[in-house]
Amino acid sequence: MEESAVDLLRRWARQQVEFGYPDPIVTRGGAAEAEPAAGKGGLDAVREELGDCARCPLHERRTHLVFGDGDPRAGILFVGEAPGADEDRIGRPFVGRSGQLLDKIFAAAGIRRDEVYITNVVKCRPPGNRDPEAEEIVTCLPFLMRQIECVRPELICCLGRFAAQTLLQRPDPLGRLRGRWHDWEGMRLLCTYHPSACLRNPQYKRPVWEDFQMLRDAYREIRPARPAE
Ligand code: URA
Image (cartoon, rainbow, N blue to C red; front, top):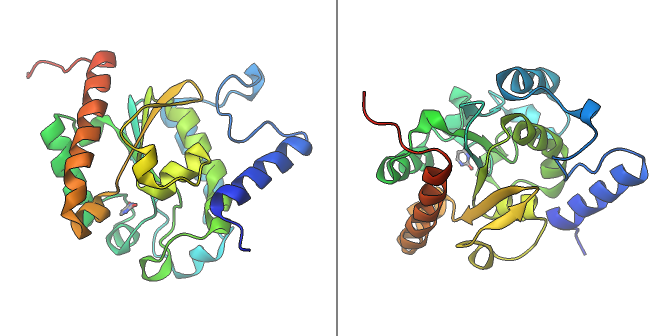
């Protein structure tokens, strides 16, 4: 039977620990000397290490590697699935149709896009927008982990099942993971349907809005809204 991304991820994490590396899934509480630089400096170093990445076959057909963008000290970090055609062309996450819907949801929730950080599970576009494969997810995962460690958000929001299953290491359908807070390495993690799922299937709009209200309420507790200037 083919190994799922979650199985592969678990196997890889076990191997890393067996080989004497820190558990890659654990991003906090490691040895002090292993603490990477936080914020922009740390993210720049991660981007530099990714370089002109050719670690998996997705590099062959990409135009741009889409690293992520937003506030390097954001209180919320969003994790999508993978760049689409528009993101591949422009080099920024969520700039196509899904991104436009995400922008509308942010506006309705009173969250500015430039105050959050947005990235994806895989940084290069899978051809024809196919699902990312387990090996591709696992190859890219250390970079996502390091992005999270650099931003050190209080809240993480997984957009869609790939982000949710990868970070939570659980194969459960999204319907079972969404709508509640998960404790994730001392951070609070919420999962919701991907905006592209809402575009295909408007019945997901209501649960997504409920999830975003939870997210907004938690966010406003940690970062109260600034009065208009
Ligand atoms: N879908 C994603 O998951 N990420 C993007 O950046 C764009 C669309």
